[in-house]
Length: 472
Image 1 (cartoon, one colour):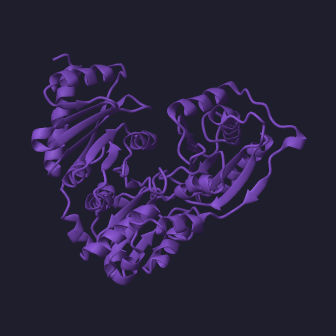
Image 2 (cartoon, rainbow, N blue to C red; image 1 turned 90 degrees about the horizontal axis):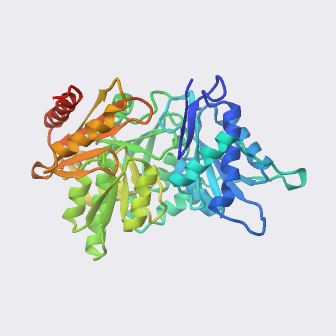
Image 3 (cartoon, one colour; image 1 turned 60 degrees about the vertical axis):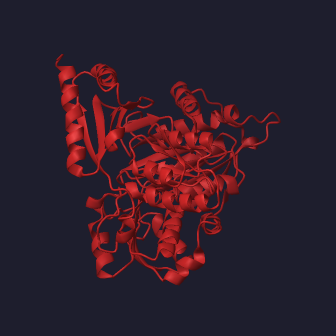
């Protein structure tokens, strides 16, 4: 049994002892803490009721967790808008559609079916800041709650915001609906038996795309490991080739991440989801003479920086984590941003990862370019990322290693806002070292023009780290 508490919410496995898993008691406690901290985030001097949106993915525990969350909010005197089955980006946008004061998304994202989570939103439909999230955690620990009396209990209303979300996606100027319809694409969708099976086929139908569905029944009984990685997408790859489709689309259970499969059945590679969409938007902005800024986290491919600079734009790197990406995007007024895990964030619609936006923009680009997906991939800078880790017996060694590496590689371009990232500008390679928040591990990502060079770079830094550990 596991319970992980963080500034963005809590997640854990269902069942077990309170405090060590996501039990009903833990759900109630953290929901009450979120409710009790609402006045800190959005003061209501006249005492009017707050309104909170609640949406869920299709995992099996969703109904149980939803009842606990909704009941707790009502008991706190808060009105609730239930979205039912809804993608994470749909729930985020529902906060705006409903003019709500926040939202709670019930999803453990790419985690297996035994997991669930509460993801907490502000009144803009964005994740809480670090300080706001910490305030929720602190209050939950104290259990200092005050519930509403009977005449002041909250109310429930229900609304499906799926079509309003899709209306907003299709209204984006950069989404060329007519070009997509004219291209007569065939797309295979693997929705892992969650809410992607509801919204993604509906989007594709409205775009005039022939949609072939795999695992689109929202039972929550995931057909395979729900993380959209190549090893989990064998059936999708085979179906794309068998059906002679133009594209395969895989989404995670809450539909904020996506991965593409080329027409030849090979992965487009998750890192390039954001790169391809950004290249398309940067090209439009360059033609219109608009300023261009893009953002991704430190562990994402350099290809985004390359395509941004190709169009005369400025690239910025944030700390890892969606809230860090969106915070920096707001600061630099970014055109597009996201993460290398297939998360596309397009502020023109809302500041959150959205697979529907990613698909619509990708198909618009593909329709304009009039080429196969595999051919499109070849137009981008080719990089490969290797992932390694160092297991340590003593977590105190982590800072020693990171500080020593900054000295050893002082002549290189170093970013230390989140661990240590060493950019070797001469050959366009990098290595990023971050400590784990849950165990004595340093995660090491390295990127180069070939996988062999990426692995070699990672191993070189590991060897240096081992020498530091051994006092050499």
